[in-house]
Image 1: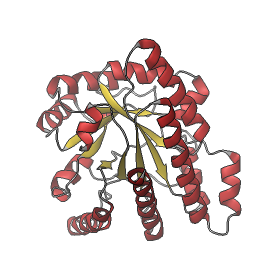
Image 2 (image 1 turned 180 degrees about the vertical axis):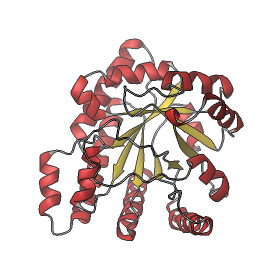
Image 3 (image 1 turned 120 degrees about the horizontal axis):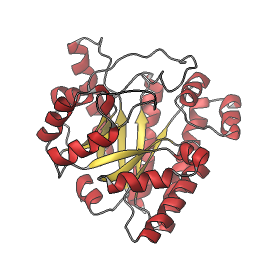
Image 4 (image 1 turned 90 degrees about the vertical axis):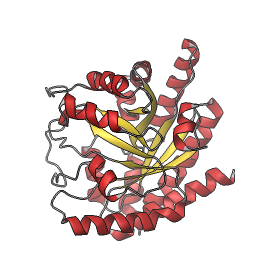
Length: 307
């Protein structure tokens, strides 16, 4: 059963691989080379799908200095159509809705082949923003323009830790048409389990079936990368930071931590009957980190399909 069918049937146990498109400043011929190298690297994994992020400047959300400068990337929809057109699996295309005028987003949604494309709609980075299109408006627009397009939403376990109501936000998004959720990078497994638990029992109380929650994992090759994750709002428990800081090989320690976290969440979701997916994120340009992400995806696919 393919990715879209699994999500429509509220089934899980799928593995995705997430990428950022090349920088806007990248020469067209180099963009094509990157796309070909990416496909060659990922095809042997037999993934269930790809994720293409839509990168936005999040400085309005966090006034602290950004550890890495913001660099605009190519539009993920354009990158998919122009450079990844022969990729075999469905692709989840993120849309940072605040970047788009209603007409352009409506046109893109209406053109999508629902067997090939899914989309995650992401709201503004800050509540102080005044975008041309709000998340709620974008969800309604998309549902009207292409009712069969599978729409996903963002789930943030750390926000649940702070506010205690992320499960209610998921239920509201689900009522608005979201058929799956994708988390930001998970380091705090307990925060993710708390969210899954509250969501599962809230669904049970409401008499509705839960939709798949896709947990995102990423390897971390340096403490500066960890600092950037924190800047983005990812909570990294002190013990994990200590392990990574004092490890002889930070990347290997991060790999082992991500593998253990994913394994624990898989077991927990299966116990509660919440459908799940795993999303391995690779946003680094360092070859060693890219290869570690591919190996993590390979290990997790082996675990899921061998069970």
